[in-house]
Length: 334
Ligand code: HEM
Image (cartoon, rainbow, N blue to C red; front, side, top):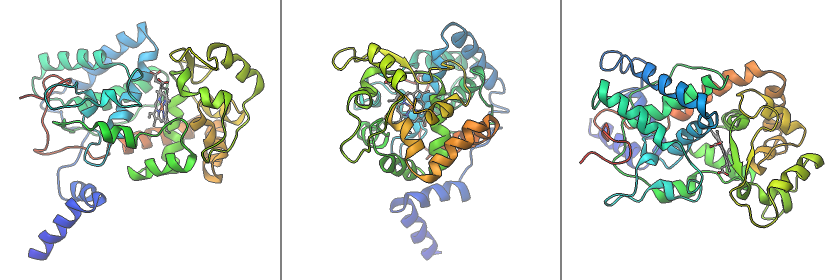
């Protein structure tokens, strides 16, 4: 028994994977039925708010999908736990200030709206982390993408990690190896990387995120990748060599607001907007093969996207008596 406890402690404190396995094997599990009795209307509330919002602003689907990703990709003890939603109040330094989030992530007021509705109907029951996860799934559905059953029961963190956000979210000019390493750190593999990058089939990027790709792609271990010339010429009009940092370009210039497999077709034509997009086609044989498969068969992409989103949503959830159910997603309860 003593040995068993010592082993568990070792897993908990030394081996992050061990903690993950512990929660799966011995602790509570996320479950699609988690709110079946306590808040059976949760999924209806989320999709109703989103349907109205996305009907007036299609981009919001992309922004909410990205919020979930940036919430999950912080660090081991800060996975999909709503930490991204916390404002800088008291001792908390908000992840909203990280290099990847500042001036970039959006959609917090939509999450507030959903949460306010949930607090009216099922007070203190549904976590902000679960709201983010459901909103990501519904954003896919409302943009024409796949649906999937969302495991629920995450709890909310009572802290945030600015440094974790800065160091664990991949940068758009990271090398293929560096990006894959960051995915591997969260238990995601090259298939997850390629499939999840397919979310760049919707949404926008600021000029500052792809300028290097337009004007000076090589260096720092990054191989040069030739951009399709007319595509590049067009991009340079809205993204000059200096200034215009915040100018927006669509991530998928063919079907910008539709969740489909055009993103992968673009990559084959050297028309990936971000360096991190295009590198999937030239990065290694496996990723190249996956890009070709998804470009040829949207159904295969959709199935893998759904599977990888569930996997991403399972990164280090807080469960049981860990964390709390925040009343307001922007601040901890006490
Ligand atoms: C593979 C590593 C990734 C990198 C380097 C990356 C990078 C970026 C960058 C630079 C932007 C534009 C941000 C801006 O300029 O303000 C962006 C937008 C976006 N990203 Fe990613 N991303 C990655 C993976 C993902 C994943 C895994 C998801 C979701 C599952 C995702 C969803 C999105 C969406 C939907 C947008 C558009 C957001 C909007 O229009 O508001 N990205 N990403």
